[in-house]
Image 1 (cartoon, rainbow, N blue to C red):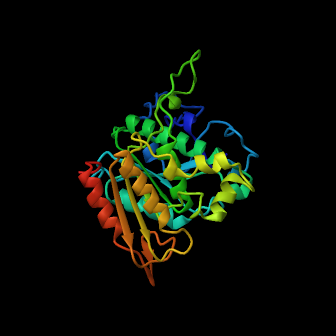
Image 2: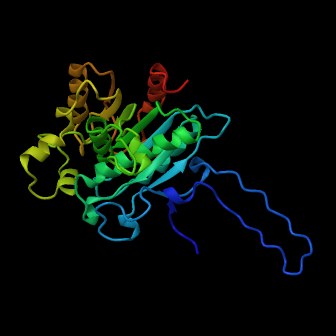
Length: 314
């Protein structure tokens, strides 16, 4: 039977059993297969062994997954990036997922694209944050198992995915004691969900004056309470514990005003947290790395420079 998703707890090894012919006079014992790291399995990995907490069904839209894009051995540098595509919390943009993952892998950074649950399918906060936090914990566990550096785990998000990334860098959880009688029996919970750095691309950040109304509605529903709007306006949630961040935006962005990035960067500066802010004059919303006829600013080159400055990559 073919399964559309790979289960996290069920594929630590791939076991193959060879049965000899019934009339064979000589019986040989097959060698045990070597464990296969998850980073070498190209296919979606379920965040949870069973139904995800709060699942509204059992269809693909109810199953959050991670898709790995491993860097080749000759360029792999030990860093890992969790990628949160944008789409207004109503969809997931392919060019901000797979497109980014292939770029990071080419530069030696193992990447994972998260398919998180969406407001268009009936989900609301904190489901999206729970999916992102779970994914970050898993990616850190994968890094430990696969010989990568668990202290170099980044998160990148664009547009509404940038809001989710900015939520994760300001609302992360520490590792939980785990065990049969402790806070959690799940070893993934032993990992912190705090990213070591954040990358926010034309991000939705504020739900105040400069909010993207569609993202806010899909995440929080109609007429959310004021305290929830404030809690998810992430420029108000920056502390000295927020990890360093790289932000870029364009002045021409008509969907998500540039003030979102300006306010977040100002909050980071007040908190004394390292921040690299890049504001470009030209460019529409949602460019990613650009496409024919729609060139993007050279933010990728500047991101590489910044990651090297921070010793995230060599």
